[in-house]
Length: 160
Figure 1 (cartoon, rainbow, N blue to C red):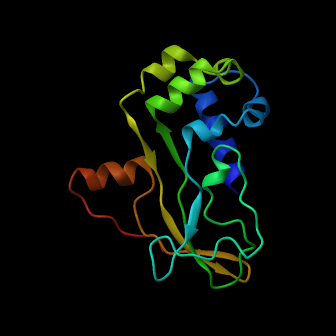
Figure 2: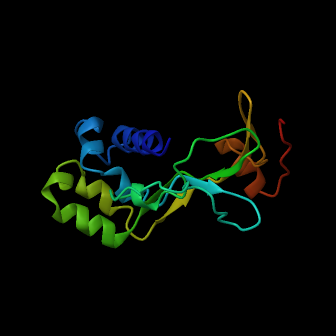
């Protein structure tokens, strides 16, 4: 799921002119980890970052982005997790990628530079795993129209 999130982020950044080239090639050089350097999510329980994501004997991955995963285990019914895809523009990571020929070839520098000092954005959803999928526990505005209405002082009525 983490790699899928990275792929979607790279596809969208390419669509909006910040990246060029083949997304599959970007995945091979771990370019997605530059924009999403954190793990996709984690278990929730007694602690914000609850333990249990790595069963005994599981070896952590060492690749950029993947080494920050908080779980690699098979999900089971009634487990509660937060799913947190995000896109960040972190100067040290941008500089590193721009100096790395294997990654720099995909970056549209003039477009990337416009997002320096932006920081980033992350969507956080809490879910419970069900027998046939998941149940979304987060109730927040999601569309541009819903968000703008709330920011203008309106109220949000969940569709759930």
